[in-house]
Length: 346
Figure: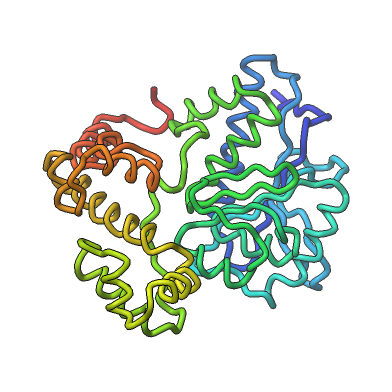
């Protein structure tokens, strides 16, 4: 029987395979959109219009990009959305990005929405379109991204930032969140939820700060501040008053505050909170120690104050965090994996 493909897809989505792009994410996105089209047919019938999607690569002559795979071959038209997947090892260089950045700017000028995942944000940044705009990338690359694109408003707490014509997703596996966000936008929440259920992935709504590890800036060149940072790390930021930190740096408190914030991007109090919460996360993940004891061990006498700070930094309460990432949760996940009999079984 000949397979009938709708001649008028709702939207055309291009996954740009740039130098160093992660092919697993590119193929995963096309699989996700294939499942979304399957869900559309189940709900609306075989002739219902779905999504057109394909892979694009840079042309050998350096003049933009061309389509190398198409779910609807032979149809005319240009992409309505262009997705920049994660990089395998390191972000694309400015030199490698230049010809593709020009092509992306042109697509954007013609009305396309540009999307990035993880280190794909570096290619998007090279277009200049993130100037003054909110964006996210993987927390591991946040400092490098801010140094390379200082005028972008980086927010690594968010897993997905949908700014209309520009959408950025943070984590390495956040292509699932981005893909589902596009399915939700183009095909509606019912199809999005059915797609998520079929793929056994969480629907959008997570935050990157659930997963990110505090990565302090240490290459700022201020030796006095660096000495304090090393001291805070060694002591777990216990008894770290402003006076004690300023004395350790050999600076007046006001001068220390100014230089510390300039060097690290955080106030000393915020920096200490991140350090303490980082140690608390390790305890919640690896031990069954009572939460009150964890709070005390990282320097909080009041469990209520500890909880407020923990939620502020991670987006989850200590109990919720342990349920999601603790040893018991990991063991339960192993059991579920062992009892599954194949992909897609529900």
